[in-house]
Image (cartoon, rainbow, N blue to C red; front, side, top):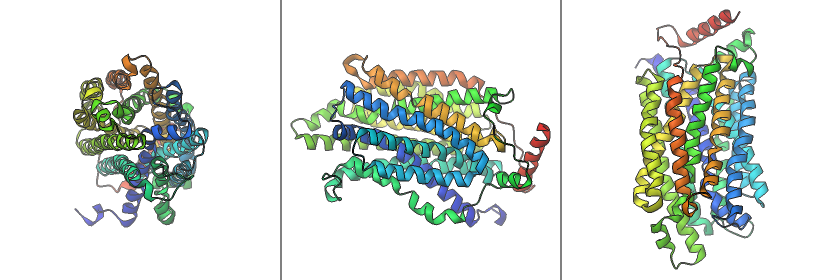
Length: 464
């Protein structure tokens, strides 16, 4: 490796901050499946399976996703208008301090509002970070590697929040009391402030995207437009990526994120809590759910690394995505139809595979979307697919699952998750036949910065 091929200190700092951002945006999101059951028990007194419990579970999954999707779309527009760095930093601070404040919620309504502001920050952070990294590392193979491996830290965030929740349940009695109690779900939420701390120190050293900044200085940066996404040139890309992003999130929110609620219903877990006092029952159920969730997160981490490696070598984006979709259609419905209802040990293995196949797709979209939109439209286009498709439409699968639960034999959430997973994977496979392939990229000896600016200028001349 030549000296010019090595990362500079600034580039390493950029990758570290992006990795922290990716890790903790998933950290914040995946808190909810872990804490929703005990939080509702404390704030509402609702018992699992009751209409009141299912209503608030649906609200806590669905409303923040809708609010985050709407404001996330605005955030993508502002990313194109104001720059990548400014919006990225603001979004991380928003979700970190919102999550911390949620740990002190005194009502279910207060928790819901703070989950909404947390979701807004998370939705904006993904779009700003992906655009930022894609433009700071324009050389194709390096860009694919940087996007793939930094996004892999998202799954590390899932492992971290699982570990944080496990530690909170184990050592809650030794932590300072909040409202005269030691509830693990509150300490888990408060831990979400962690990413804000290094960011406050490093922020002055973060560079702006050179592509965006150069166009801004030269006065050639076009104003982003939502309507341009539906022009003949980008319409197919916008519609297909939005629908397929929705399917990826539908699998996660309609199946995987319900797993911690399914675990206490397993025969092995019921046997473990039989005859125990209620506080001890709650602790055992939460610890087993956290353990199962850990298998899912490790699977997701492996899936993201697999995607990062394959994205460098597989040229066809359709073929790359189908590596995850085809086995997912077979494996994930089976996991929720059988092991999730009867076999704890097999569920651990199955949920590992489900995490690998589903979460790996999220990294795919982070690598794919920057290649199909120009600089002035990149944040807006990414945001529409990720936030309208993924965060709004896709996460509404959680609401579909809770509704289907009331119709299933024995009100089985596992069977409802099986049905939703089958639906979204089948739809995604069909849509993949219409997924546009990004323009091919030639790697030359020309400096990356100059090449990127020339590509941007050529696009401007074509528009003129």
